[in-house]
Length: 264
Image 1 (spheres, one colour):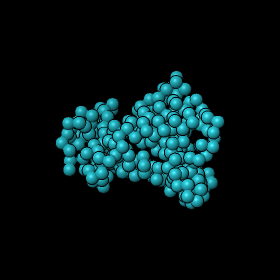
Image 2: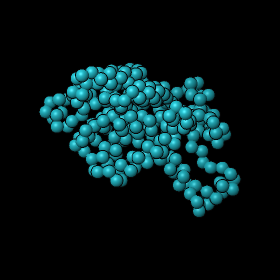
Image 3: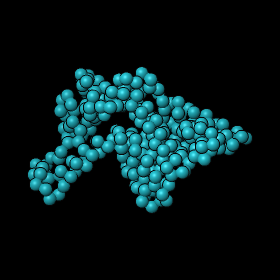
Image 4: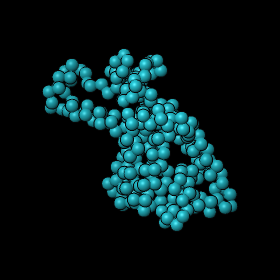
């Protein structure tokens, strides 16, 4: 993302550090306020409503973001989970790129709501954070029901199935919301996903290259360190990261992530 790299060099100093802590903290405060006698009325003033926004209640354009994802006692576990996801992404990308990812998700949720003439929520915004985390760290395990260890990549597949179901079977407003609200994910990961798809096509059954590589017992690597050339085939447990300070699309193994010379 050369454009993003140029923007980061110019505006990176304005990025909000530890953004997810502020978002989660605000949602926690709203949850506590919702338990007061005027809680229901207070929450209603925060919800996204295209009609009321057109009438001048413009704070609703952003206030929906601080409405917590749940109003049960489990909300604190959910908020902590999203805090972990957000901070992990911020560590991976840096403050500026995570800010861009999050606020572009907010903007897309707003755009989708206006297009669908529906009430925007942070549901797909939170989903985009989870999907980004699952893409970057698919082997990370969480304890489902605090007992069953499950890798996030499997939960991500379930999430994609739910999105696909919405796009195919749900009414048009829901289709629009699902399709538009996740565009920030595809903007950040589309190139990598396209490369993986191409790798799958290049080694499709019936093609000569596929049969040759199968006989050799190898397949095209997905990740490769720019410095040492190591791939996931050399060591299945090897992890790779993109450098936010290098121009272009460059991956590094963890050994060289912090020691390489940045590419201008």
